[in-house]
Image (cartoon, helix red, strand yellow):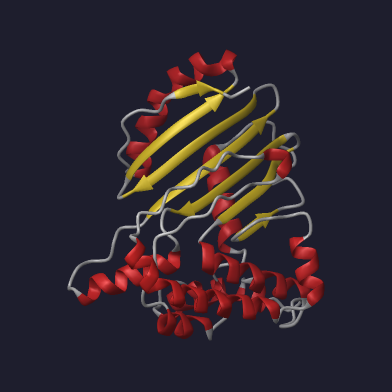
Length: 279
């Protein structure tokens, strides 16, 4: 993986804005709507060859992974990006959602997944994290050899995350309580890197990143709740969907949610509309 970054810096000079349609697990599908690209035909024609060469580079790295990993990692799945899926409930004995505890647990899962290993190394070199944090990554655990299937699986997902910027989290919170969460940047990370480089050459600051996210939570006695979110420059937009019988009660609770988001997360948010789930 350490050889990929300089190659990206060399190849990614001009690219066009793009975004892919992404489906979650077939049994829990989320309606992730694509965003239309705004790049001009001229911009795309200038960038097309560079993008093609870069994607060929990433694919060549993926093809170097063992065939056994490629067949098992993609069988029955059409995912792009990093996919974090746990086989056991996060809180086996819990019966209700503790938001702060859940948030901390999800942060730990993502941090220790190994998907952001190189970024963590860079932070360690800059004395921003202790070496113990680096040691706890899957890459450095004694039971994982460099050519083990576990490490090969992580490397494959790192390559896909590099080219798409998409993260999936799929886990059971406690028995019969299921969480699916999709996060993706509005602009492909390779595109964003090129744009930032062009802005720096012109003496401008990089573009603030913007993220879109979809969350599906299935709870006993409540059913399915979905949230669509977009965060840009600390401005958050959110929409909620639930069963029709819960719309009024959930809408009345959004005022408290808005207050907590403004105070606790420091985001700007105006309102949270609630509608019933599509039939």
